[in-house]
Image (cartoon, rainbow, N blue to C red; front, side, top):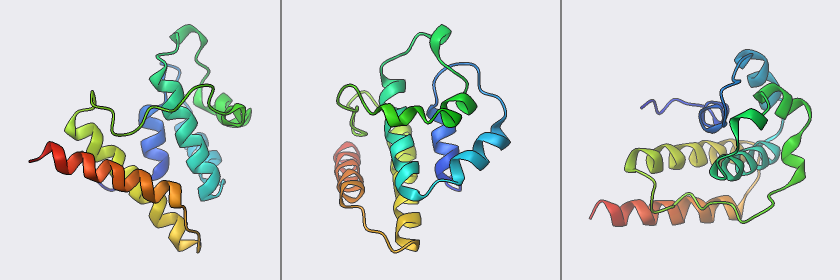
Length: 131
């Protein structure tokens, strides 16, 4: 597991479906957005992937980004990153992705209390798992 992944890399890894192509173009489209929009994209995609969408109806990531599908919002509560079914590796990867988003936000002088709370909750969960 690489700890040098960017927020885009984490998003790409959880994006559902099999139509994953044009990664370079998708990276540019994803990274053109500020940290707040990247967070919205991440949250929506995590929720969406958690619904186990039918692969026949999953658009390519480039279409998702072009059409700004995260703007539709989350239709149901997003799965919390501390889901008890997640493996330690999944939790560690999730924590790293959230910390990268937090780091980018701070570099831009932004504070995201919701993100801070997610990181703390995930860290608390992981600490409990390693006891």
